[in-house]
Each structure stands twice: as structure tokens, then as C-alpha cells.
Length: 211
Image 1 (cartoon, rainbow, N blue to C red):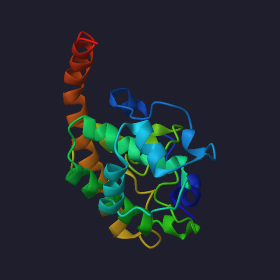
Image 2: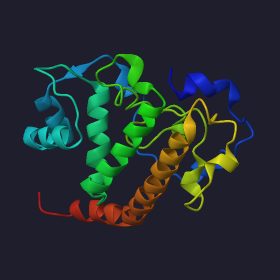
Image 3: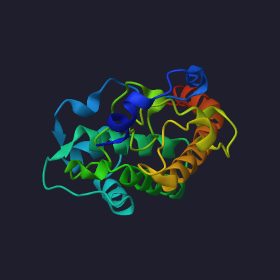
Image 4: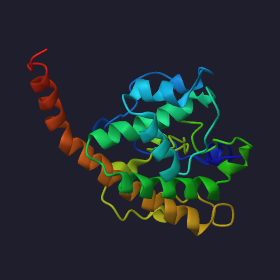
């Protein structure tokens, strides 16, 4: 069972949730990842305006499973969408891979990989409920507001959230990896916010180009 199921009863309901006012939401639709649709690699390439070769490269570099024909679930498409959007804001693929490795390590420590799903690390992609509680790439809901996004890096989670990680159940490793995840995510979101004015200006500029 994942973190949400195990610690739901121990969540500190007094945690401050106002930080999300400064958070840049990347999800732009409803819970698309759970409509039970499937896609081919070519379908996803067309929807994201990228070549199948480019997406195939992402599969390799992010260690994602490959499927035959039209068998890719919506969650797979939504993961690609997140990566493509972040790359459009100038976030390097190396940085995204570093965060992906950290998130997968955290999810493994929380035994999310025991669900039996081949895409256990992607299955939450596309969900938009409780966005303030979700990791950036896997979109996994940790069950508590991740207010480290809005505070100084170096936050000591063992002091702020003692009820979340039971040393014996979760271990110090999970705390440390979560802290590393949120530090890197904070850097990424800062860079996205910094680039946003240029993206908006470019969108206005391109509208005046010859048709």
C-alpha cells in the first residue's frame, strides 16, 4: 500500500495549504489519465507535436516500458506531456531525469512498485485533484501538502512532519529522498516561473508572423 493509504489517518490537518497560491500548475485538464483510452506511439507524437523517434528516445532515457501497437494508456501520454511542457520552458532533460530517478526511488521506498502494474510510476499522471500534494513528474499523491515548494531549501522534514514518517515504517531514507525531490522541484518551478514572461511574449509575437 502506498503512502496515502498508510498515513491518511496520521496526516496533520493543521498543515498550511496556502502555499499553492504561488505554485505553477502544469496540469491543464481534468483527470484525463483515467479515461481508459489507449494510444499508439505515433498517436502520442501527433498530439504532442513531436516525432515518434523523439518519444522513443524519451522512453529509453527515462527507462519507460515500451508497448506494441496502440497500447499506451492515457497516463503514459500525460507523463510525456509534462516532460514536453517543461522542456518548452527550458528545463534540461538531464535535470528532469535527475528528478525522475529521485521520485522513482521515493516511490520504491514507499512500496508503490508493489501494485503489480507495469507502469506503477506513471499511473497517477494526469490526475489533477489535490495538486498541492503531488510530486511533479510521477504526479503521485503523497497525502499531505508539500509546502517545501514555497519555503527555503534545506527543510528538515523530520522536525516539521514527525507524524508522516515513522522511522521504522518509512525510514530515514524516504525522508532524505523526499527532501531531495522537493529541493530539485523547487529549482525547476523557479526556472519555469522565470521563463513564463518570455513564453507569453513569444506567443504574442508569433501571432503576428505571416500566415
